[in-house]
Length: 194
Image (cartoon, rainbow, N blue to C red; front, side, top):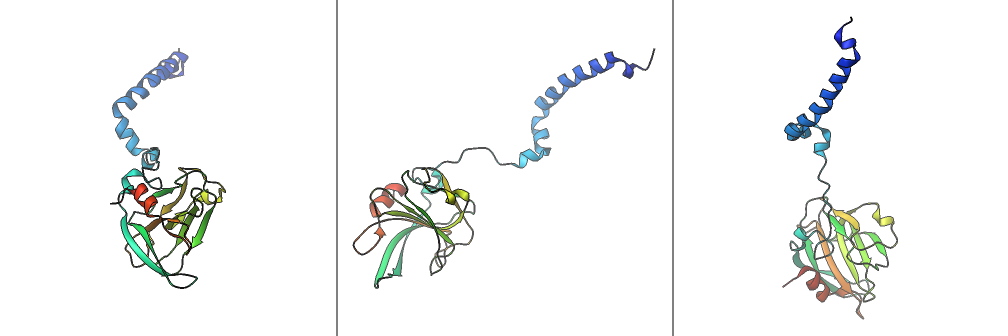
């Protein structure tokens, strides 16, 4: 006759109780247990997808403020374009607005009023148009030659756009004889402007 914990019956009873007790503890103390685990620090696995404006989540689509910026044309004269200025927290994703985008450029904007990087997404229909998103931090998606609708192209950053109090500027352009101009119909359609 030895010590009880050295007998196999003890270990069988111990493991059966353990198997029953752990799920019961987890069931009754789930919030307390999760709060002390490192996994609780991970953000939710909610899928983020574009809203009705196609380039931002729905909750941000209506936050753009319409502004006009006049710049010198490379060919001489002035060019005034309409932009939507967004003041977003860093890390807000921007999405590819449609399939068939021919090319995605990452351009350093250095001239006033722009700063940081711009994404230029050339539209397939009508040819010659583009989506310009200015003031982004980019992820690895820029390596993709033919991005698909809904893919993340970059995120808002904290650098901002000089003189406008915004973190990101967005516009849609179309081809014109004098060079690209704001596509007012596309802007109004995407962002439901008044």
